[in-house]
Image (cartoon, rainbow, N blue to C red; front, side, top):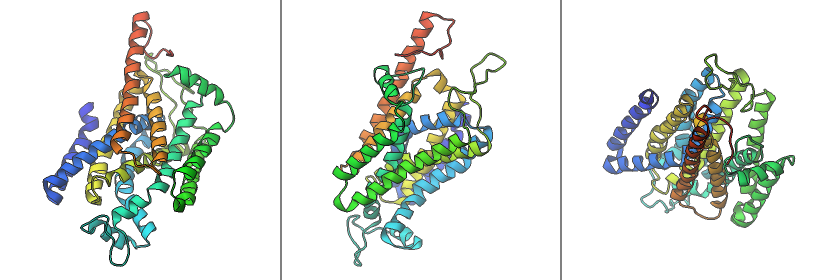
Length: 373
């Protein structure tokens, strides 16, 4: 199963590394490896969240996500998206933006004779509004999770009180709005305040719209409409099809885009070459993230290790805060990656302890028996 799930990712990664070596020699190969590690470390929590949504989709929509979705992730977010930003921010045409990306000046900080900044400078200058959009989208996702009552809790001492106060209507919007106002007022540069505020509001609207469309078409919530298999095995969530499946697919793509912002911008601290960035983040990193997502779904990992979803959401909350802070303060991408890995690792260890405790208490009990810590 492992080879079947990761085989395509391994094959494409080998091809991408060969292309990198031919394109730029050993240095390009090394950069692609570094970028792929960066993408996987930053997006592991994305894989966990993707898996929680993907297991609710029908086989058809799962295949759509793993085919068309990966094309959007690799080419759309890791290659086209930076070019679109440069195109929009500089006023250059698409061809000129691509030429600027492929033929940067010797000094990335240098300006052309006509006063136009380099590709990297334009993209970096757009970071505040990108961070505001992605940060607010992810923050809304995190707040929606922690303000909801759940039978199983991980950090019970914190999650239970938050779930109680979460009964206040629209609390997520109130908290997110306060965070956006504070970030725009105290972190954004004077000439960026309006764009940060607009981008942040658009991030909130996007989350509310996509999430609302899902509810409009009565997407089954986790834990609802469960069907037990005839063999008495684990329960399966009702699979979303048709319009419901489409909006879950749309939700996953927006979620992936929000996670991608930080990685794409962070990649420019390593290299400004869009080809190397696309090979490292897309053809290697994004492919492996997709394979990890499929592995989690096929193996039923989220059912076996019930705190992983909690850890992933706390990692999302941390990433959202980091994105908002990065509007005014540079934060090393290594810190961003390590925070997510630490939280998910802690959730995994807590899940192991929980499973062992349940097994020792009564061997007849299933590891999925609800329990809190």
